[in-house]
Length: 192
Image (cartoon, rainbow, N blue to C red; front, side, top):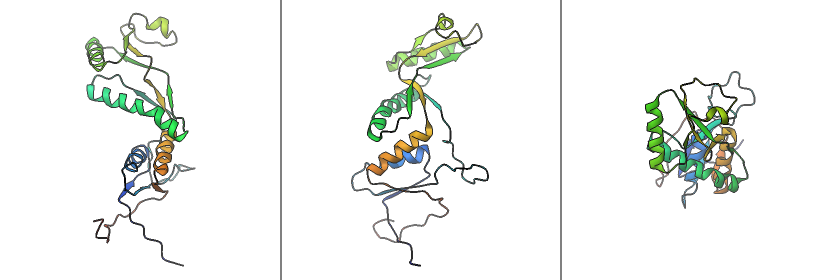
């Protein structure tokens, strides 16, 4: 049996879930940078697995309206990139279906509307009309509801991971479906 081939990368991303796959995708776009993403794929059988993956599900809400301006901007930037990533990779993971924010606190509603107006988002206070728009919802009579019909919906995390990994590979990143148990410093003078 021959010794395993040693390969040196400029960057190794440990963890092939939502964050690691996105990191590998974006890092792989840096010119003259070799990237390797290391992490096990989703297990076929979860019972007895040592590795925890928080992306093994079918739905996550995504939206830009928020009470915090930073989160508003981060949400907007993420949503703006989803369609480009889908087009690039051919992997559909985002469904735009709108987003409703419900609160029983009037000051929360006022803060939410103020922050989103400053960000230029098209959120609507539908407190007086939500029962007509969403007759299937059962909310307390004192509920305040903000509706964002565009730039909100849900993603499929599994497919988002696939899209980021596909995009990374398109930029020559390597993906190793292994469990990392040890990380050693490079013996190469150019990579210490």
